[in-house]
Image 1 (tube, helix red, strand yellow):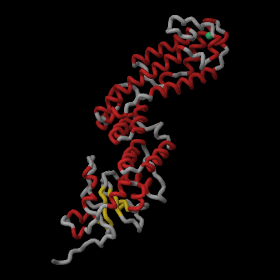
Image 2: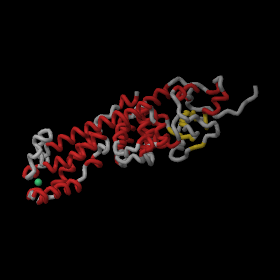
Image 3: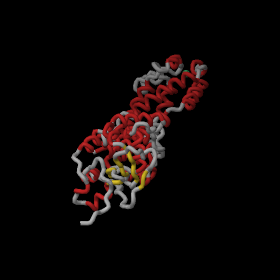
Length: 355
Ligand SMILES: [Zn+2]
């Protein structure tokens, strides 16, 4: 048998079954390109690297096993499994790809972008790098979850929060895709957050989301657009009704309004001025019927409320309301907006969305 060119003997070897651990899990459209792999380069090109993680697009990241093992029980177990010399393996044609420069290659399901950002959270002395969009962060979090890297997940979420990503997660389609992926990957925090964001999307039906709907399971979609929307609407309606019926605790100056008590028996024992209840009644009806979104932004409008008060003050010659400082209206509005926001987001059933 003639001598064949072989890669230099690796210092640590893994069996080919270990390399293909990802085949045991459902794959996306990310099968490895059989073409030549390329190096990602700095900062994942350290001379002391002892393993290569290969992205689904065949880009190689050279890292240290110790860093992966420290961060992840998954990798720790993986690297502690019995290892074998590839030269003794029966499947030489397959294994030729599994070693580069003597380093074992682990084929990952993750894309290059995901792997890059994911590894910045894992490797010390490399600056954490966030993807540019909330949607792109989801697969990174999913990878961290899959590999049981809880501390890194927390770090990543903190950075996302600091960057304002949860407050502005993108266009409706981006938000829905992120929601679908978060549900599928078991990321409750991101699923709940994006579900909350969809409440402020205009209700123009499914056309708003276009092909992003394909990224969401039927259960996740139904939970979001039917159950969650209605539950949150009911919850907001109830909060709003209480607030409107008895505003005096939060808006004590209304207690000197001439209209006070006019609705006492008319509107469910409201202890509020008539003009006030008239103003909110219109909004309550629209929220209940679905004509108006159940968000603070859609419901609470300080200027409109002030105008209603001003009209009443002139018509009823109510000195109290006529001299009301806008600051008091604003204070009430701010408080009510907070209550509505809280109420609107309390009913997302993550477990149901995941079914
Ligand atoms: Zn008044």
